Image (cartoon, rainbow, N blue to C red; front, side, top):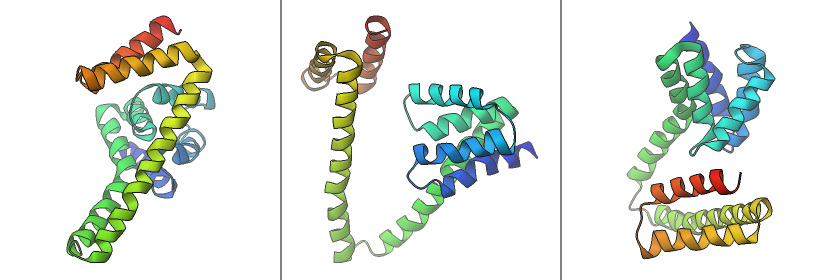
Length: 176
């Protein structure tokens, strides 16, 4: 029964949380704290802070952690699957439709219209991250991280995972 509860606790917010992980966090809180009573509000805020500190989608990390706490490894797997299942089902359905009409000029035109939108969204996110970094750590630290990241990624072709890990270590040691 616990696996079904874990599934519902994360599947329902996944369906109703339009806008991704951050939009579904209040819904997850309602299920986990108020409906099932697995965590207190304070514990949930700590799990949320931990989820924000780690790379990747917030909702899946929270589902994995809470599922693990409630029912072990299988509970974590059920929680993560329940979080991604709504998107997975929708993607499979949409991909079959897009594949069926892949040669249609309308579908090609739609795909061409989506690319600039995604680029603008990513650019806006980078802009916000830059100013949050600037306000949080100062101009000198932000400039250093930008230049170092550029050189490591573009000039010396270091894998992005190493650059991110190095930036995390730098932040923990120098900026803490």
